[in-house]
Amino acid sequence: MFPQIARYTALGPSLWSFERLPSGTTIENVPLIAEDRGESHGTLYARGGERTVVCMMHPRGDMQRHYAIPALVEAGFAAFGQAGRYVNNDVNLIHEMLLLDVAAALEFLRGTRGFERVVFLGNSGGGALYTFYQSQAATPPLGRLKDTAAGDPFDLNRFDLSPADGIVQLATHLGQGRLMLSVIDPSVADENDPLSIDPSLDMYDPANGFREPPEPSRYEPDFLSRYHAAQRDRVARIDAIARGYVAEQNHYRRQIAGGDFESRDVTDRQWALRRGLVGRYMAIHRTEASPAYTDATLFPSERAYGSFFSPRPDVFNYLEAGFGKYQTPRAWLSTWSGLSSRAATLDCLPRVTIPTLVIAYTGDNAVLSCDTDAIFAESPASDKEQHRVAGDHLGLGPEGPKDRRGQERALRIITKWLRERF
Image (cartoon, rainbow, N blue to C red; front, side, top):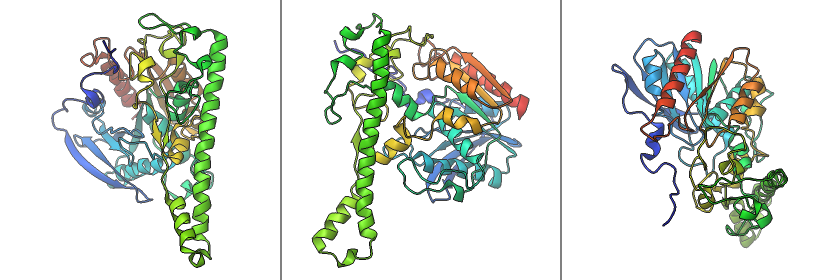
């Protein structure tokens, strides 16, 4: 019998969602156009008279029906859920550009709707995104980033980045790139062959300590040391491939922009145009391979066996689905590379001094306790709190989608924290 692959076999995206709103809630659909003309959209929930609005956004997820919204409105806050320009598709996601979608939301909420205070509620990748944004917003113009991770010109000093007044880090990871660095399979021997393997680096090889579930695996320190070093090496190799593609394309683009281009032979011009415009896609094979998925002695917690996606990561590792599986070279460098992406939570934290609340779910398969502990420890905010709540990455309990006690407890902590400050 084929093993169960998906951890959540029912309800799908509604696991992030809510069922009903408090009475009297008004709903406003808001189209947004950023300063670079990028388009996103959001939904504003309010009952009238609120002076503080809580924002939710994710690099690729749609946060317009996030499960926190009813509790926030009931507690007296407006809530704004946003879907950015890359909603449901991170194939070409450039984090530096995504910051302008956040800025567009703040401009609308403060400038058009007149809210006095804006608080970020960053959930999972949303926390890393908001940390990246706040670090750039808190940097005086001329000191902000001037290009993307791929080296393309994109000067954030030209844009109005309004800082937030507070931030909630709810099950926030260390950035999509740092997450990838911990889960990418270093045993891939050929990036063009999803089945290629170096057995000495395969965490799913019994010779290295793997045991078929439900029996737990156990990995020796020497193997783990080689494994993690090889993970970094593989990310560096993929970075080099991505940068090679970008350099090749830019070479032909410079030819097209040259003053003598129109005088060249038509076949030469056709070749240059094709190479300058061609869109490459990279398949990142096997990104479901963190030893902590199968060895519970690593970073002990209340998490169940397996990953966020699957109770059988040894099988899921070979599926088309998963983190960062299809990327343009520029998106890989900006978003999923643990060595090149600037959207790295701990790297951005030194400039995030606003009041900070950090909440970890103790059964989280995607964000380990050591990550949330590091976010709290390295936060420079003078006003900061940390809490742990039972639940998986979605705040769900052992009974699955019907058990939302973790979400409810987290929301009680969040609304109390907000009332005390905003």
